[in-house]
Image (cartoon, rainbow, N blue to C red):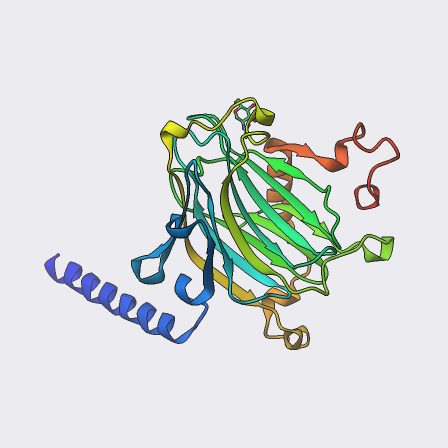
Length: 284
Ligand SMILES: *[C@@H]1O[C@H](CO)[C@@H](O)[C@H](O)[C@H]1NC(C)=O
């Protein structure tokens, strides 16, 4: 018995050592917020700590806060773990998104709309191409996003954009250029995040206001990982991630599950909003 557990312990130490060595060699393995991001606003409301492993944003009555990536990305897979503002987060919005710059910018958004204690956050998503958005889909989550860290990811390829939550696809936006729908593929984007007050619209459409007696409101970030698909990997058959163009059967099932039980708004179903007819990508 004793010798088995000893053996296990040695094994664990050995594995930890391996992980440590591998992580120090592969730049994408361990996130280092000092290395990958700049704190852009909100003074000391944005913080990096634990030697670069953890980042937090906070919001009080005076200001919110934000950060952005040092690098720009053109295609890739981007993962980040977030733990959202706990308790009464009504009126607050935590935005986490990719964006290029200028009037005809492209943008891929995750926005987390806070709520009163015990009421569900809304995950709001949108896609802007060449300065034009209006492609909102909103979801409830199947877990409490304030209790633990969860992984929010984007897979961005010339063929499609996939939004994932804990590796479950929640939304796919296909390249519809052949239908005349612009697709983000020429402008590199940075990663941005901010925590701010939006109590004029965020919670129950603006009915519930921010309770400033609960400030500061804080959200946490860890385990950032970016895998760039360079144009070389187009032809590099070793890059499996790049080669898989569509979701597999399991991925499609998970997507249907989320869309059936957790999607609460889809612009593609909003006939009232588009009396002239639904956007092209919705009907083709
Ligand atoms: C907040 O909770 C209410 C009541 O459950 C719900 O209708 C609403 O969608 C929730 N989320 C937001 C962001 O308003």
